[in-house]
Amino acid sequence: MEPMAILAIFVLSVFVGFEVVSKVSSTLHTPLMSGANAIHGVILVGAIIVADHSKTNLELGLSVAAIVLATINMVGGFVVTDRMLEMFKGNKK
Amino acid sequence: MSRTLYDLIGLAAGVAFILALKGLSHPKTARRGNLIGAIGATMATLVVFLYANEKSSLPLNNLGWILGAIAVGLVVGVPAARKVQMTQMPQLVALFNGVGGGAAALVAIVEYLNLGAAATTAEVVFTVFTVIVGCVSFSGSVITFMKLQELMTTRPVIFPAGRFIIAATLISVIGVGGWVVNSLGTTPLLILAGLSLLFGILFVLPVGGADVPIVISLLNAFTGLTVAASGYVLDSTLLIIAGTLVGASGTILTRKMAEAMGRSLFGTLFGAFTAKAQDAAGAAEERPVRSGSPDDVAILLNYARRVVIVPGFGLAVAQAQHTVRELADLMISKGIDVAYGIHPVAGRMPGHMNVLLAEANVPYEQLLEMDEVNPTFGQTDVAIVIGANDVVNPAAQTTPGCPIYGMPILEVNQAANIIFLKRSMRPGFAGIENELLYDPKTMLLFGDAKASLTKVVSALKAL
Image 1: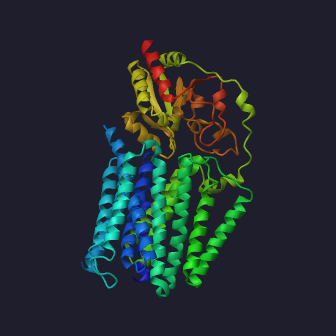
Image 2: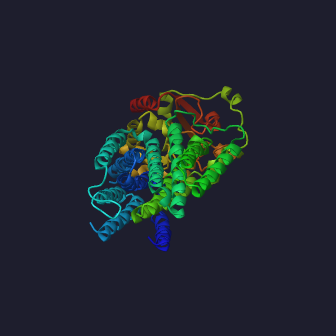
Image 3: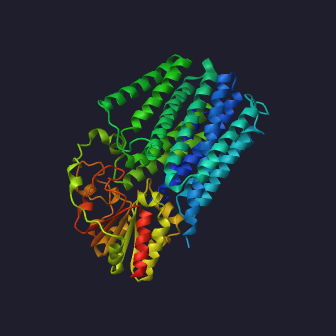
């Protein structure tokens, strides 16, 4: 990909990232952190790609480990965030 | 699947992540936001299995290994997330963040081994960045986990010449990083990973227990950036977008958390090296305190017009959320004005106490944030501090140089009477003596928070 295009994506994403969370109340700091944490679990995509590329047993072993860790990060992250937020729902009324 | 369709789905997942973060910033939309994020992540994962290009054909190589590894991840991750006690949730988040950082570092190492001499300088630079930051995030998160789980001391760990050792480690990490970029090789990369892991440990050890959440948030932002860097190496726009979003929003969140605690980020990370020696607490322990019985507490409450409950982590540990609500309901039925004063960092993480009280169905309107409740302590007859200590410690306002100096506190010292429910005279998580315990208007009720509250409830009912 074009380096300039990548730089543009990066810079714009930084501003979007700043903007979307700028008004969060302290009540939601923990779930927001946990949700953002789950989102970077999308490194799972990268782990699958490198597992597919793997040519040696060492590479395959390391990428299998990466897939396990990334899955824990992604799925565990979304589940635990949902559990936290489930409790907020009850007291809205 | 064509590259265009693959990229479009990747873009849709990126948009889902933006909507997720936006949703998570508002109480009403938070749960939906999280769900949108999960759908985006699932979509992004599924399309990888359906897309072939010049580098990979379908079905993917090592498909059995890939699916098996995902299954293992599910079997470990889902029950952990489902069964964790809400009190232990901060350390679970730390751990999930750490394994994410570890995964990013492993991905970078594999891609580096795979590309070999074919890697461009830019790819190697980004790989080096991912390995360093991913390893720091991994080992740093493990240390934060151990501190929160109290597997090790929660106090800052300071060793002789600590800051020089840390600086030297950082310099060698950067040096070895340059070496990897200059002369490609597996050995330098592994040395780099080892040094980075060491740096992550050294970097978190001096942070005091109360500041650990800020560090978790910072490491979370770090992991986001490593994911973005992997996206460059793997030619995945989605990873660049998702990683950058987390990196940017995580940075803002870290700053907001630090602000809520009245700390500068720099002070959090390096405060242990610059703080002046604390006052010796040894002499203070011998001073007399006024301890009361559950009946004394009940009488005091019975004649109060306004009571503010200040819950802390001790309440959560004792699982006393439900009992405290029972006490509050009883007082309200007697016509007493009851509110909860919630410190932004009550519990172990910002917002943690709100989660715990919500679990006990405490009405949302009764939960007052610090700025709302502080001006009312002057008209409060009784402040009940349950298992909290540092967040009401006046030393934060009066003792420059103490580890929590400058942290905004709940000013319970303004109330006419103060009741502390405590297990012992042990200082709080930050390890500082609390002068308020010796105040003449303070009454201490020792014991497990839940047992004590149950006794107070029955004594109050009998009146």
